[in-house]
Length: 340
Image 1: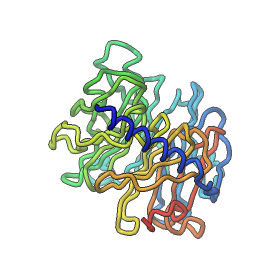
Image 2 (image 1 turned 180 degrees about the vertical axis):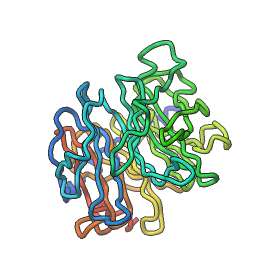
Image 3 (image 1 turned 30 degrees about the horizontal axis):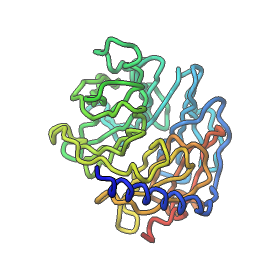
């Protein structure tokens, strides 16, 4: 890289940092009740019969951890909360996953790091569908390389096969992510390893993963380097499609949420963790769109829904964790995406 190009990039970073530091804080519509230990990653389940009774799930990372369930007022729903999970890390939701020839279920998938496994539950019944847990990264000899962190569920628009893409605490420079197909046996799920893919810089770690089902794309945060993009459909190849966004972040690139069909466009909303704000990118060409300050602190995980849920969330719901053990809920229009 020439000195002139290096100085141009440095100047852009300084200018961006100056502009972002003056952003007005957008207050949350709802702040949840506190978790016990360390709030981390949220996932939103939309109730198809009554959207106002939708549930926001959020992990609480600890050996005596839990997946909390919150109503849209931010109150804990104890009967839907999953406890005694050993360091739950990240979670994702998928709808209408086939259990057998005649039955489907909405499911929640969570990484249970200290047990080196995934847990799967039906939503909203919260019944286990995994036979006690599904081990991942079993071919790795070192324990530290078997500790799952990030999770994203992909339902193929080609054949409705359902996959889970999993990251781990540490791993190799190549084939860092494992993609498993979910297979159902008598109403319980099993895993079949389909492929290993994905570059890792080795600088920090990879936790945040998000999938755009309709476009068959997966994005993940190589935290100190860039947002990496690959095909989510295994048959479409393992070539990296893009590595973008580093110049817009102070340090760690964290939680990723994908908002589709907002004002006719799609957006990636990505946590700029140490700055306490979010950077928004186009889902079409990954160009930087804007930054927003939502008043959260040290955000790891976030999620978004673009349909109306209630009078408070009439244009959709964006949820982000904050390091005070809470989750912050925003009506989607507050992010101003439809204006871009």
